[in-house]
Amino acid sequence: MIIIMEPGTSEDNIQRVVKTLEKHEFKVVLNRGEVMTVIAAIGDKRLFDPHSLGSLEGVREVKIIQEPYKLASREGQQEDTIITFDNGVKVGGLERPVIMAGPCSVEKDYQGLLDVAYAAKEMGCKFLRGGAFKPRTSPYDFQGLEEKALVFLARAREKTGLLVVTELMDSNDMPLFENYVDVIQIGARNMQNFALLKAVGKSTKPVLLKRGGAATIREFLLAAEYIMCNGNKNVILCERGIKSFDQSFTRNVLDISAIPVIKKLSHLPIIVDPSHATGRRYLIEPMSKAALISGAHGLIMEVHHDPDNASSDGAQSLSIPQFIEVAKRLNKLIGRIDYDNRMTKQELGIK
Image 1 (cartoon, helix red, strand yellow):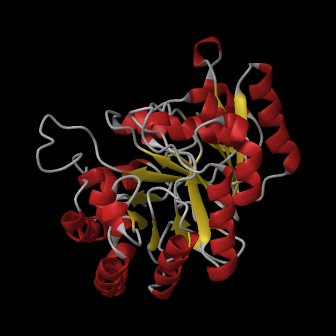
Image 2 (cartoon, rainbow, N blue to C red):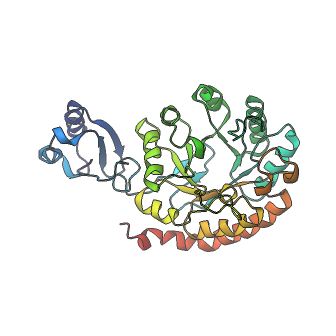
Image 3 (tube, rainbow, N blue to C red):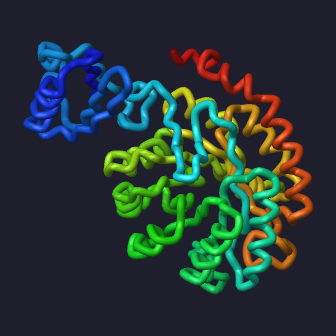
């Protein structure tokens, strides 16, 4: 449930509500806004009448949330979450959509990674993505360079100023990620790895959460809830395609409709991965355009210095020259749709 406090109410009144909830074994999360405080309470409402809280001093309204993702819900927080990084980069809300670019896997050729990073920087990208630990279907496929790859990514960040995004597979590697990366990615295979979600929920690093290949939107938002209820509110959702019965022409099916649906249901930023969604280079640009027009807060795409000889996912990676041409057109589109993004809330009926 959500308890909305009166504007300017005292801290004593807020704490009285918190203690009442904790007495009935609710987990409490405070959202302090500029005008009022909203209290999210997670627990079993069957043994307690939530509306009795309405009689406490300072309580403006008690709302029962039907959906189980209370912290990720638009009802719990109407204003968009905007994630701000130390260098001033912002993701979410009405901020300019960001582009995250880089290879599927960080390989032994550091100069190749650096060439991609410089191209990304030139085209206005804010993030360098690259896999250090790779989840592969076959145990015989390239598994990543692990810590060496993290070192390469950190060195590229020093050269370019790009923020580093890479995937975490094992909570035992959290100390490495806290040291080397700016955004911790949870891949589609681990979207419902609840122990891992709880671990990143205790991190101070923003989390990029990818939707599982067979996950519903509700399951996707509940995965975000796991992270948020463990303390980390800086979650970026990523739509990367869902499984289909026909994989003859695309790797997955990009669920474009998920973007406006999630923006209506949740305040969290959502970006799109056209590379994994389609598995084909020629589809990256049109799907990126569709995602941006649908209101995505950004894109994450695979770019490789030599995609035909990449250790993983070369077929869905853009070469550097291809990326530069695509990015030019995407940047032009982003400039044109700023006004449309400002209309999104009104179009969705969000007050």
